[in-house]
Amino acid sequence: MSLAENLKKIQQGIRAACDRCDREPNSVTLLAVTKGQPPEMVRAASDLGLMLFGENKAQEAKAKIPLCPGRLRWHFIGHLQSNKCRDAVELFEMVQSVDSLPLARELSKRAEQAARALPVLLEVNVAGEGSKFGYPPDRLLAELKAIGALPRIEIHGLMAVPPWSAEPEKSRPHFRRLRELKLECERILGVPLPHLSMGMSGDFEVAIEEGATMVRIGTALFGPRSRAKSRAAGD
Image (tube, one colour):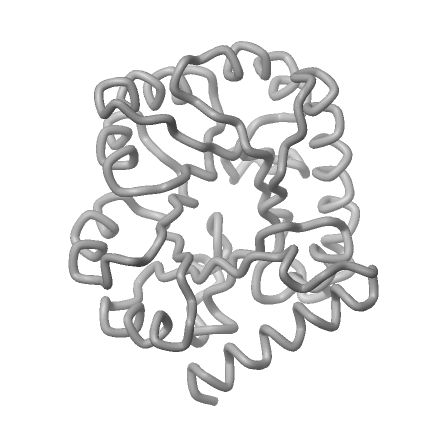
């Protein structure tokens, strides 16, 4: 299938999932995951109307983004090392993978130097997988106020990558847990958090049914990659 056909199928899936849970399709944002994709593919996707793109590696993004159309919006969705925070602040509209207070502090410091506020999502390891990054739920709640008090950090919601399964329904409990955690975070902070970034190529319809506002899709849009590569923060 062509890129245009893949996009049409994804958009149909988003609409179908929204219909099932009485949501408006425009309440869900499609983030195109471009890890390993050349600038030409990004441009082709943007020509089809996509505006929001996600990268997993700061070094790859630093080389790629300047070669892509300037009107595009970029989110960082991979594990971020502290020594890449300066690049992340310069390149990305949002960092979706904040998973510790020290990382949030470094991002706030770099955002201060850049004279900007940085929207972030807090990444949660909802299943407690040892092979994945992300906050354990208890530590997330314990550190939430400290992150929220950082001068240049704006918490916009939560992000998660559930365990891989060939059966989308097996992701549902993890998506539901993230939605419940968001409600707990809103109570602690006393403000609404607009975003739940969850759901990828194989399970995005289930994620939407459980409240996703953003789905991160690479494989279903651009074609298959190896499972090891595709099950990072985006697929």
